[in-house]
Amino acid sequence: MLPADDHPRRYFQTFYMPTSAAVLRGLPLLSSLPQVTLEHMAQHSTEQAFAKREIVLNKKSQAQALCFLFEGRLQGVDFTSDGREVGIYFIQPGDYFGEVAVIDSGAQPEFVTAVSRSRVVFIPKDLIKPILFAYPKLAEVLCMNLAVRLRQMSAQRRILGLANPLQRVCAQLELLLHTTNGQQFVRNAPTHQELAIMINASRETVTRVFQLLQGRGVLERDGNDLRVDDPAFIHDVASGRKDPTKDAAKP
View (cartoon, rainbow, N blue to C red):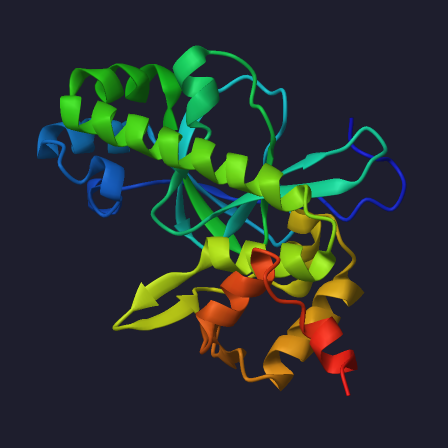
């Protein structure tokens, strides 16, 4: 159950509109499907806009559709027994979500919320589920992505087991790193609050860690991204081999 008092999520008026075969063709999971299949799916699919902090999927709801993020960014979240919010994963444009409940016809295992204004495409479960298993390439991609998600969640549990919040921040950043032309980035970097709920820390703690890392020249803001100039430092702190707070205390 969601905490009742001062909960940050609010419902907004949203709009529904039909989608097109061209939009579906641009989604990586569906790009290899025949045009006739895409056109048939488009006739039965809808697009919906969500405001920041709006719930896209409710935990324990029954799957009605496989969802694709067309624009914006989403986050999978859950709540502890005492009402604390815990971030689990991020969803980027082109990604699909809600697949677990579609595959096993069970309940949605966590909440999915919008962390920025977002547009989501919904393809009805009864339409998409047979297609997922009729095309071996789609089934392979589905299985591979489920394996990636499982590994990410295992890594997330290990991060939460770290006692030092500085380690947790660095371990989370390391998990989000992507390499482009030899330079490492955290693309579309999460806010301090979004990072905080993923590592069970306060926003103020995350801000202090960022100030320390930026002061040492480890990372810099680059538009919506974070440019990591010293990934070895991030790795050493995350693994416990280096503690810059103790280094700073040395004469």
